[in-house]
Image (cartoon, rainbow, N blue to C red; front, top):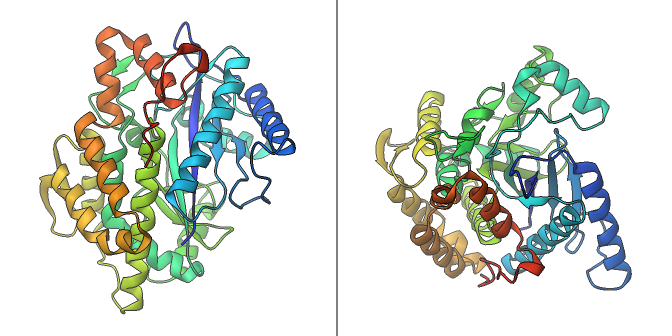
Length: 390
């Protein structure tokens, strides 16, 4: 089964710690560097969408950039592409006098950033006004290949109960506008202001899913069918399921963990469908409660079991997730890697925990920590916090 990852990052001023609206020149430098590296044989020259074809993209606001891996089949290949993508973007950012920061929300306030040029971005900005004016939120999106659109909708139904646990494991946005929000993932609360957010609705068929999307577009609350903010959704262009639950990962290993668990969840869903088992139609309000608990507490407090409909410690839910997908992880050869990464997460804490730990020295220190963990500055003498590999 194939997978790919999109990572969104913020550009930050290394002195002030505030976000910097320099996406256009940073992306231009990163693209030029990859072209040069491909020409000299330093990186692969795979066709677009294949392994080795790292790509970069603009986001809604000019303080954000995105790195996109090619299609990968194994975690080692995925990790290599994630490291390369971050390295190219970080080098381009340093050349423009800023740093690359992997965080779900901006730590320190700054002026409202300009919207990235383009007709679609302008239309979205006009639709949502103040909701997007300072929506500097970044996620880690995992794409997993499936046979077709009908299967993608059925798989998405199976993913619904587990999306809050993926949020809890990835929480990396405790600060916003210069204050501690009290949440582990404030990005989830920011995202909840949009229509088409949260855990997706249960849809009995692809036709029902498409009708639901078309209605939201017709109602004037979504710009187009690809605009939904649901945490899992079938792609509108490819036979894939896109899971958008995670805050952007502080380190590469955090992103690898999300990718491995997501692919295993999709594998598990496909096996259930092959056996004729449909997904449990978990009520939307129960899903919403589970998602709020995950955003509030991460893995350090109680979560909500969407199927049993009762509170349970988030670490128990995470362990239950591992048990649920263990056969899929074993089939892919990923079980040892995932166990190791989960053990590390329990020891060191989520990105939110590490941000709060750094905050003892002040919020600028948090931004500096984020930049160093995202992609260390080669001139700093620091080692990559994630260079232990998977």
